[in-house]
Length: 207
Image (cartoon, rainbow, N blue to C red; front, side, top):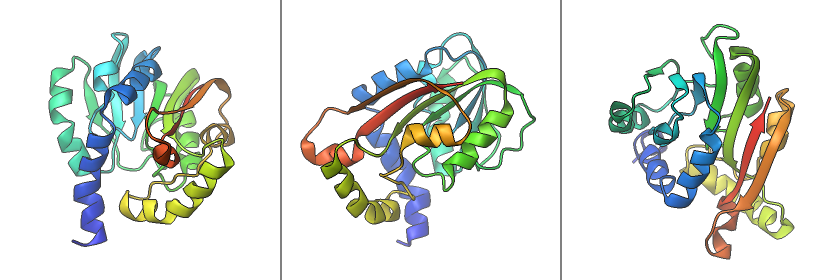
């Protein structure tokens, strides 16, 4: 199988399987609190956030490059009362009007977007004044020994996981895009020490 076919057909299924567990689900629920009105979701994936949308959400504009991921989300979208419209493939270039959304949601997508700062700047353009950004993402760990392993493993990770980076500093990416970090929680997901290069997670609320 070519690398392109691997990225297109296999990676979305692996992501769906690896990110739908209870621990991550609990973090998704917390990250989705406070969403309301018209939501822009960058990296919609297989729709794993759909069950956590609060009743105050009126619609979701989904940016998702993977056709396989979009098909995997069909059942979750069908069960939701919130209308979801796929409106683009590239979070770095949004074909959406300025100030057209109330809030932005990004979960486990900044790691694979080639230029995450550009994507979050686009999100800032599209969200209304006073709108907020909700982020849940894995990235650079606080421990030097883990960061060394992240640097060693990142070339392989990018090759087999659709361009996923292990070493991005999530809150700094948010700040570099012009957002103000209002809340930040960081921790390792439960599991063996060997998993730590992949499971240091940041939850960010920004305005």
